[in-house]
Image: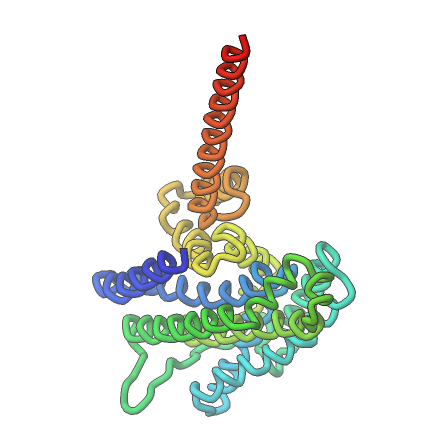
Length: 336
């Protein structure tokens, strides 16, 4: 399965590097947005899918990263300093937001993170001296480095693709390390994990902090991509949409954010032929998907494998039963 995931990942990277070159500007914009949300949901998948925490505040981290980059660029600070600054700010904010997870779980933790998202959104909307309030911040520049400009849509897309691949490799290495095993142990059985000597408090906080960092980096890339941000982009609804992307792709599946983000970003564009009905069609498609595949799209191979194994076990039991009955009949015949 791991080799299959690696092969699929390599094929996707090659396809995503080549295909957008044949698109027009709007198509490139959609694919860039897809990549940005892949980064954001990779972080949320770590928090929700691997560590088993509930978070409905991811859009707040996304917004913090976006506003950090926008404000720094307006102040004349380089994008290459502003982007890691946004990620670092989200890291420490994620640590603070993770503290409720040490005391509450499930729906109560979800409401706590939802409250954080609402508070962050209110700051973005009301602190006009810093964020521009409802008017937002516009004319956010795109970066350049060493004489290479990323002002063009295709050039910026390729830059974001590089960021996506690098961050995916970092996350892959993290999940294959003892940290990854600790996260999954925390998700599967926190009490057992603690009895095995795993510092559950530490890994709970780090799952929020690392997930928030990914969201902050994604937000910074998004701000520079669209050139304008305002608080409406970072509401609780946006957090719910990101959570939905993780669930649709498959929580705990490494490649899940790719499919989940495609459903959340690319699919609505394909459904625009339905015009005013497209939101209804999109919502219905997601509901049906959740009914038939509650573990997400990437659970399909596992479900097929489990069904095949179940059939093989049933067939083995049937054959064993037939052999047993035949042996008993032979014994009775010999006794007679």
